[in-house]
Length: 172
Image (cartoon, rainbow, N blue to C red; front, side, top):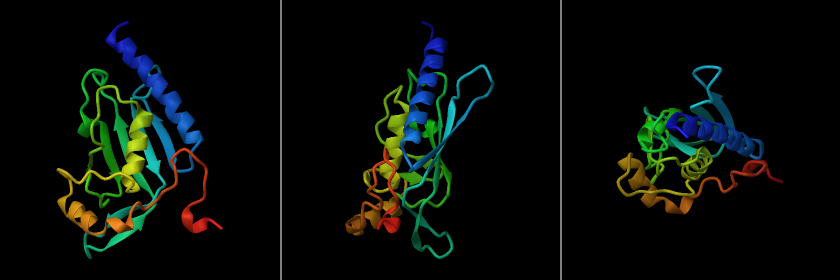
């Protein structure tokens, strides 16, 4: 099977698996984007509906946000070569305050070639909700220092990605 055919088959599987996850989750909204009608999508946009932090650029105050957009792009060589900073991109808000985010870059950690989209979605959810933080060699050093001083505040959102549960403030 040629590389193009392998990638085509892989992208179709990513579309199917990510749609199945989105149907079982109230924490994400998925959009798949293709360059033409004959090809499977190679770009995906995921809106995460979990609590994360943002920093106001004017006041430098830190507050919570419940909507974050992340884009995923799978280049033609993705099954052979992983380029994390080209694959995972923060779409907004631009002032997400996290040690592993430096707009527009998102560091999801170790990412071997061919890492499935669903795995990347889980990694981003855990990162955004502060269930997983990797403060070593951060993209945002200020956020890493702040996180170290405020670890008792985390995680921000403990709801599992694959569930349909109300947000904590709406629970009765």
